[in-house]
Image: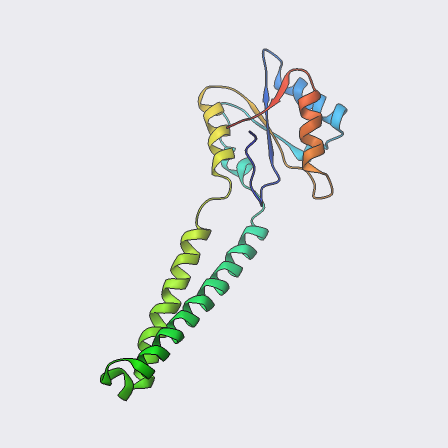
Length: 172
């Protein structure tokens, strides 16, 4: 099973056997037609591994904003509904002070909705891939990290990598 997520367009490729990393990179450029800028080499001694593993966060940020707006609004609606029920059918204190009842229940509703959105969106979208590459680095194994241009099909690149002898996709 390949490691991938909704927002992650990266492909991690492992070099099998004693093939030099530069030869594997040349194979990817020749057989798949990748540019030099699309292939990063993560070596065992690489100090810039964090920069190479970072993915484009624009889509993730947009999704996080949407989740916060959505769940904040759902929390607002739940707070309004519960406050309405208490004002209509609740104890005399909530019926006598409807504004305070709405304030008291809408605020926690919004808070809980935003809290749920934060909990969902803080889950790192690329943990499995990063952990797999870092594990290979800890075992002193090089990895090629392909970040294709947006016009290239990720599945086509993956099938082409599978067809190259000496290279394999990094699996979970």
